[in-house]
Amino acid sequence: MTAPFSTSDRPRLRMRPKTDARRIRHGFPWVYANEVVLDRRTKALAPGTLVVLEDADRNPLGLVAVNPMSKIVGRMLDRDIGAAIDQGWFEARLARALALRETLFDAPYYRLVHAEADGLPGVIIDRFGDLAVIQANAAWADQRLGDLATAVQAVTGIGTLIKNSAGRTRSLEGLDDQNAVLSGALPKGPLPVPMNGATYMADVAGGQKTGLFFDQRPNHAFAQSVARDARVLDVFSHVGGFGLAALAGGARHALCVDGSAPALALAEKGAAATDALARFDTRQGDAFDVLATLQEEGATFDLVICDPPAFAPSKQALEAGLRAYERIARLAAPLVAEGGVLGLCSCSHAADLSRFRSASVRGIGRAGRAPVLLHTGFAGPDHPQLPQLAESGYLKALFFRL
Image 1 (cartoon, rainbow, N blue to C red):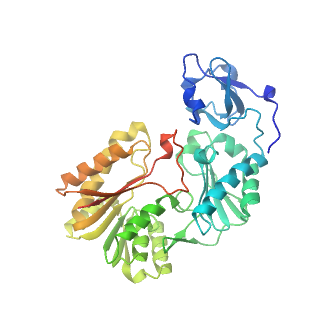
Image 2: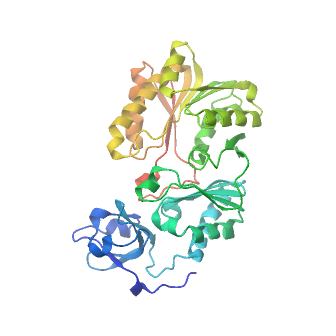
Image 3: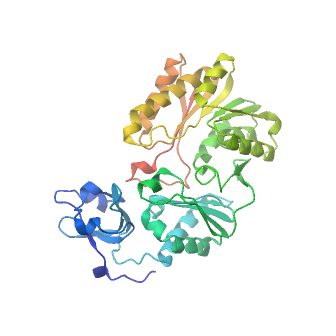
């Protein structure tokens, strides 16, 4: 338990008259700038300041961290307006997050903290054995990174902590993009990570995001279940996500396609570590171009998976993003052998499941193929969703038999 804080010392942030505060009371974790009274005093608050959020009638709603520079002006931290956001507070949240992961997994490779759903808004922590990568994507967490890092070590015993500052979210919060080693030392090379019977190589120092995407683990497992003796094409493969899982499941051969030569080099190392290098190949290039070229070559595969980056990262990009998802489906479908499986993924929170599915089916239809939906997948349980926050349900995976 943390010691109570004197609430009289904390500034107040009041919601506008006629603004409905019920969704905040019902668990929505964000307060938007157009919902609150932003007077001169409020605008002068330093990003990350803790304030008491009140409804229009001055009834307290909870303790929020503010950032007047952001459209998300407030992030709910605690319903107790007297809570002290200190190392003990972090330890309590982290212990609860760790207990869930230790129930789910028998090895310490997982997302330890998934932001709002684990009670730490804007905070991502991925664990790789005795090493963790922290993304503090909100001003309040970046300012308290010392307490957070100490709490991570106290709760987990992890020796090496790395701060990863890449990504659009930190820039929206007005934060720097400087990575740092918070404790321990950078590994001398990529880290081997076991998942679904395969071994992946994670570049935690210079790779994308934290070095590996744990969220696709259950979707890799489904693809693996239909991959025995299959010829597999993994497009936007990064370090070999679906391809290596398929090989571990007995695929005859896997071709991984990505625009990044370093990512494909890690995929090749993963294939070697999975004892499947003889059944593995890579092709570097723009995914759209490679799909078109493979069709010109007359290539076909029993299992094709496309797992692109977010084509619709915001509402403004939604329509263009949906057209891109449709195009991917149209280019990929002709490469699927009769009776084969096409897997299409989206990590765009702005494109909900219904619209993504519709775009995918349109693309498959435009390719002259007839789809049957076999399976719909989401992020793994180490990426829990906050039901009140649609953005936390960002990942969708659709598997069709053509």
